Image (cartoon, rainbow, N blue to C red):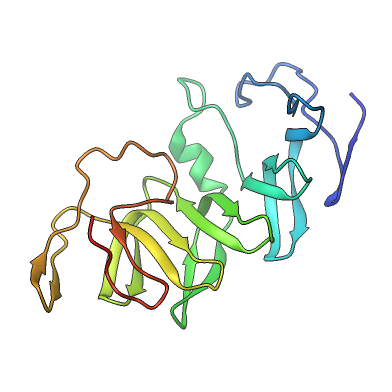
Length: 197
């Protein structure tokens, strides 16, 4: 298969050759108007984005060609390839949140059309502590940011209790319907106030 030209370089799509780890999906996908929608790479490679350099195995695009989501790894979890094996090779990256540096293994990074990071989803076996306007909050899902970099939402672990002027709150979604970190249970305004929800 020929390389696909993008603003992040010429990418070699997955050839479709037998591989117990690769997912069954189109190597290259397009929107109805022909614009590039996604590329599943033959091998993970480091690409340069406005927010930094990140390993990428699957990349999806906005219709204007800007990166929408990247997955550093995108293997098929099965009887032949475990999530432990997949996560073991996942790269760590540093992200600045509320003046603190978080060292995490992203499963997916979601960008705004501007190239700034909107959300970072972590692997389900990981747990991180994020400094929020309401204090430190532990999460097993990740975090969502405003374009300014301010924290937008986070999914707290079960049992989290936050003290507010209105009393204690226990934000938690028993079975989150989302697979990504955006639009989580605990939401903040850009100024750091907790949004009702």
